[in-house]
Every structure is written in C-alpha cells, then in structure tokens.
Image (cartoon, rainbow, N blue to C red; front, side, top):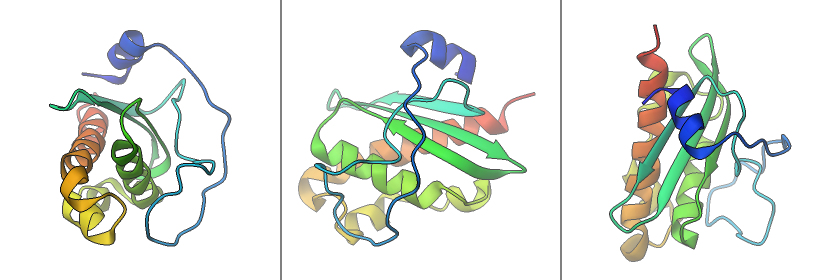
Length: 141
C-alpha cells in the first residue's frame, strides 16, 4: 500500500517535530516525551500493519538519498508495542535503507527494550511495519 493510500485510510495528522532523544539503550520511559511518537503529514513512505493481538503499528519515513532522515511511529497499542516502536524508530533514524533492513526483533528483545516473553510479538510487529514502510519507498516509481 503506497503512502497516499495509507494516509487516506488513517487521516493526515502532524505532531510537532522533536529532537532525537538519548542514544542509551534500555527500556523506554513511557512517562517521558517520545520524539519519535506521532504521525506525519507528508512522509516519503509509510507502512501500517495490524498485529494478531489487535494492536496496530504505523511507521512514517522521510528518506533522502536512501537515508532515513526522519522517522515517526504511531500506535494505540500496549506499552510493549509502544516501547518496540520507539526502539525501532531510534535505530532506523540516520541509517540508509539497506542498513535499516538489518534491524530485527531479536535485538529489540535481547536489549530489554520490551519485555521478552510478553513483548516478542510487539517487536515483530514494529519491525515488520518498518519493513513495510521501506518497501513502500522501494516500490515507488
């Protein structure tokens, strides 16, 4: 599904841009401000997946010269889904698209950024949604 179709499906919303947060690994503090959380009005590419648990994940990418310049994710899902979205977005920003395809659920689970037993499917959902957004970019004419 291309960006325009996704935006028509979920609506156009813009959250104020934020600076990138800390580079330290570890569990994301849900009480703090998340610079990656929100939707974009005019992304280069976007992806949307609804997981088997019922949570949906959206990723929005601004890509220039095959480098992810900006990334946002949005979910109304559980804490693990949001933590996984944050972890993926933080890793993807600044990477070229080929390197971003190396991000995998295992590294998110092993890092402790989501609860391993309860959050495995959340990490898979977040990574799969990032991959779908990258595919949206790669398939553009």
